[in-house]
Each structure stands twice: as structure tokens, then as C-alpha cells.
Image (cartoon, rainbow, N blue to C red; front, side):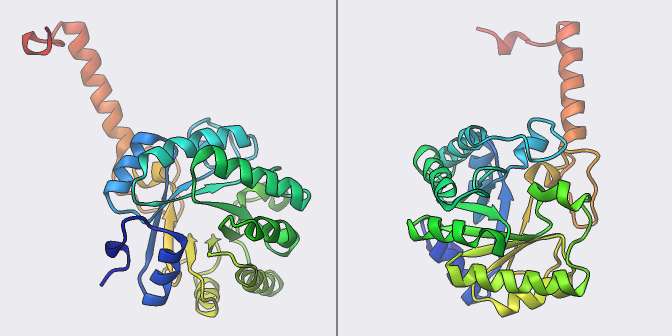
Length: 271
């Protein structure tokens, strides 16, 4: 029996049980109340309030400009719309890479003001003390390794990570350290499928892949990409389940025509 179907609220324990049960974890991003309601009704296990809101909502080139206040705003909207899914939220760039105390304060603000259930942080050994401080305070943490978009200026490219042996070995070591600290899951972004499968099999906590192949314990996509709302973004790993952009243009065009012709509203659409 699906672990997902026997719980009223998906929690970090649910996610861990899904891994143990061999059940894949479904995750999508969400940034607003209405989308969260729809994805929650669809049975998505985890709603990730991603700092990708900087890209798909605000039009920034990277995730770096989004602030903690912005993320709290988006996360609180999603938390109000999610009756069953676990709400996981990114801590934005600059809010946890400093001292453990600074990271702790950011995580506490997020949990108190948004109603989210867990936070996600990018990086491995470089921020272990910061992650430990947050977990020790009782706040669940999901790790994120591979392509970490907050470090894009360091990488200089959105290409596949951990293709060379040294970076692959560091990723495997970082994943084990995150598990040892008590992280309940780890996102693996844009790394070779063979490596992602190896890491997944080495961990007792679930891995959530994006561009990391089907050997992970779950998958995540940006909902705007999955629905075809971001028209020009076409990476190899993306499967579109709708063409929302084209549908919206078609509907808005018809609406404009009906308004200009006097066809909208008709007699049945007025008081």
C-alpha cells in the first residue's frame, strides 16, 4: 500500500517511510495559494517553495536577488493552500552561508512567519555547522547538491555537474555528511544519472532528482516548466505536461475579441 495514501499530512517521517517502502516521492514547486491548492489536490507529496520564484515570477536571470522576506511571502501563501502536502522552502542566498547563528535566525523566521514544514539549503561540507545548528533546533532540513543555482557565478554555467572524478567523490562524501547530520532528504540537481543512482543507493534518506535520471528516490520540477508556462526553457530533463503559455495566449486573445465586439458579457452574464 502506498505510504502517501494512508496519511492525512505528509511529513518528513512520511518521506523517509516512502524511501524505505520503495515508493517514489513526487515534488513540484509552488509559489502561490491557488497553485498550491491544485497541486495538493492532485496528490503531490511535497510542494517546494523554490527560490526559482526569482526567475519565473520576477524575471531575474538568477535566483540571487530574491530575499528572505520574499520567500516568506511565497511560502506563507503556499502553506495556506496545502492541506496535505509537506511544504518545503528554500532559504535564499546570503541568509545561511555566514555564521551558524545567522543561518539559525533565518530558518527560525521562515518557520515562524510562513507556516512551512522544512527548509532547503544548497551546499555540502562548507555549511555543515550551519545545517547542524538548524537541525539541532528542531527544524527539518533538506540538502541540495550538484548544480546549486545560488553558486552560479562560481560555476559560470548551468551545465551538468560532478562529471569529473574529484567533484563526484566530493558530492558522494557531502551526501553522506548531510545524512549523518540528520537531513531528511537531499536534492540532486543536474548530475550524471549513474552517479545519482549510486548516491541514492548509498543513503537511507531519499534523494530527489532534477536532471539526475530515474535512479533517484523522487523527482522535482519547476511547476511553470512542467505546465509549459515558461515557453522558451527546454532542457533535456524537462517533460511538459501542458502547453499553458499557448493556451493562455489563445484564451486572452479570444477574450479581447469578445470584449471589443460586445460579445462579452452577454445577457446571461450580467445582473
